Length: 378
Image (cartoon, rainbow, N blue to C red):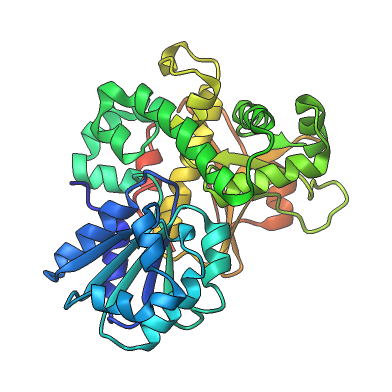
């Protein structure tokens, strides 16, 4: 089994008092992580799935006492897909306040729903964590660096969902299923999907614009919808962990771009499934986009698992000078350019260097990227 970095964080926080809330896309291993953590404690645990009618009946405000009794002498209680439970925040509050000496682990695949249901009731009673698809660091630890580098072309195309990683031959079928049924199920659960065709158009358009600045006006014209509707759909896709936005760094200088955003996918495989392209990288004309999305998301995982408290951006001015990626932490700027080809010529714009005086600038390419994704620098 591939060891997950998040398990070590859970072990450090264990107190049988506060609940662990674990967010993340479907199929990234939240259930596996919760059960593995419980088993590592050598404690008996009980498991509930919010997808089950029986669970939804038992987990109710009117049945709190019966619910407590159902735990028996178990020291760990796992509630999976908690966004399906009505009043789950209030229910968990009562359970935690009862001080039963139980460690609750609550998972959810929709940050919007579960956060709304648990935010106020569980104030001071929870630790929140995000679980991503398998990270490069986790794979390097599991496979060894040489094997990971050998399989890099596969990961760039098929991504790093756990089931994909361990079932290479079935990767295409697995991704098609995840990108279809699970993705739409989560959006449907949030608001009711009245225009599934529009969502599909937006997803494909975003997939084809990875690494580029996204104009909501242009996107709205492309999919024949109004700007507000398109923005709302993108927001929903963020809440079910399909895409995320990266804003522009600007100190309000007149020649800087400040309002545009880039949109990336949490997994290359999902992105490629949406456009129906699983061709090997040697035959593709979008290797730059695949590489940038991969590096952005893998760095995001590394920073998240190590408690990064800074901010991230890209930078561009009206003369089209650009910096792919920037990290700002403790008043220092660290700037990075992404190149697939190690021999490609690249330099940082003088306007950026003069304005921001970065503490570090670095070109990330396929010969040095693995170090950048393995060692937390801050």
